[in-house]
Length: 224
Length: 363
Image 1 (spheres, one colour):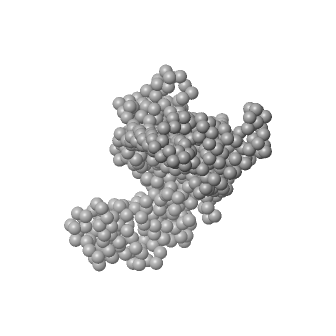
Image 2 (tube, chains in turn green, red):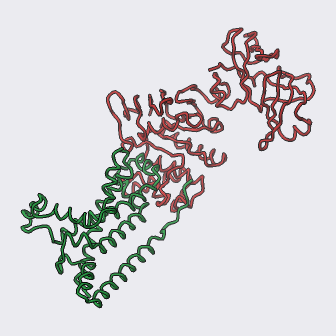
């Protein structure tokens, strides 16, 4: 079993989930509550990774992060080494790839909140940011948890984008799915099987925990 | 604390809210049917809606001014707003709901203020319950307490008591009045219920199609409407076209003839010229039915008619009576309908007191 790949995948998924909750929530909030007519353009952009082949996304991310791109050069000037084929590159690619999985569950649960609650909060003198933390977030806890689980699981299982952007460097960019692919390619089916089983067990345990937690902690009759 | 509102807002190509009025401390009822613009008006004052033009001033604070471009955010206006469906926060207890707008105070100050308002509105015993576990009346009280605990400069109520029974309503209103005796802020109370107008009101402003059509005490506006549209809103089922025949200022009455009939009606004196056309507003419940011509009555109007239809509507029987060709609606009890053996086709007499006839000007 490839423990280093499992550890790397878990680390990647955790980092990406935390970052995507932080940047996904405001995007979801804006997509839900903005009345701007042109917002469909951004909705489409956020949803793109759902329909694009991972290799296409991976190719563009690789080009954008490569040593010839402004981003790649700025990174190299700052850190002294290139961005492509590093863990950081995997994080950036995964954030883009998993963006819809974070934004859409949050946006759909924000949309179910009665707007009058937000208006009530405003008339009570509470600004938008505190209102988000005191009203929107607690009432959307299911959507936020769903976003976290989906993002985590999706990042854990990605293959194409990782291969394009990260390559296959043990301990740096060789994630679980690549390790399994590698093992199968080299006819080491037993090792592939073990890693796959570990991933399966972990995913099931994580999902069960979340779904158990999602049973409503407080029951509320609809406010008439 | 005073209130000055001038709001113009186009809501659709053929609907324009255009109102201006001054408010004093105490309750001002904004009365009108749904779609008359009342809720839009409240939302403009709270900052939840933006007028196209106008000026809204509460006390010495300018909330909105179309000319200078002042438009305070709702959070900075901090009006007390009680929503029609209350909008209590479902994940917070009653106590947390009430203390929601007090986060800038110390914990001690917060709990002191919360318990004081909870005592005023008699909800101290339900403070640790969530909104889903409260009765309708308790929710209304929590909604009011949450809005008032922040000491707002104005209270805006959007049909807040439409969901509770009349008995609970009157108790809540009494507590609200008592609270405002000490605080003296203007209260705008939106409703479409005639009963609430009488239960509450020092003053009522009647909105119709986005405009104020009447402004006065409930008695002036609802019992003696000066205009046909207000009479309709105030629940006068009969609005009969009539011509002024004779004015008798010494007796305080005048005589009108119902249009297209020879029937004469005596009504209280109103501003009208002999020969002019008016309408006479009569509540269907104010008309007495007799099967023979009554004698020795103080009522001055005794009119012959024929029943054309009878229909049971809840505890009331609605009789459609024809006076000549003019249809008149009369409300009776099922018992009197039976006792008098009333049925379609039967000739009867309608008895109406002079003061049950309200002359109103057509629109």
